[in-house]
Length: 241
Image (tube, rainbow, N blue to C red; front, side, top):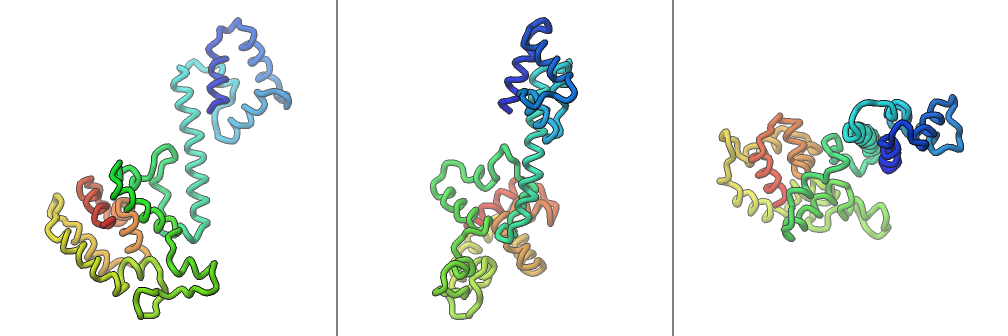
């Protein structure tokens, strides 16, 4: 972006300006000399599918429109590549990068605001979502003296996110408290948070259920096609509790 900002400063110079004349002469060369800064700019344009520097130099569009074009192309490139990169990591199996924006923080971060309590909840939620929460299934991969079984209960089950969040008997009291707290909270269109959650427990796979708890807005939007902001906000608060 800084390269293009400098380039657009040259574009703003009059057509009779020596720097702009020099830029045009270099950019009209075929090939553009490798020692020239404009050669690097041309390679950058090819990489990000941006119109050539010569086209940008001669374009009649305003500088603000050209800057927006460059910014959108670069942003789109990195969003596509980073989303593809995320798909390669098994630790990110519950994370859906398709709705994430490069220039905007994740909605979990935005919703937490300046509240210390909400920020602590958001940190735990993001650790689980990114596969970095220190469950025994993770720790056992790095420490020989740790097994992957849950130490909070005596079921002998692996301490996975699904086990911790949904079925671990040790956490039954916490779940019961949360359910009672949200029992009478009803959103618009007579669809309650508990209705969605109860339906998910009965009908959804373990993977989808964990995704609902960790990333409710994305999961509900895609799976149930619900976009009511009030309901989604309540669902997010419920899963954090």
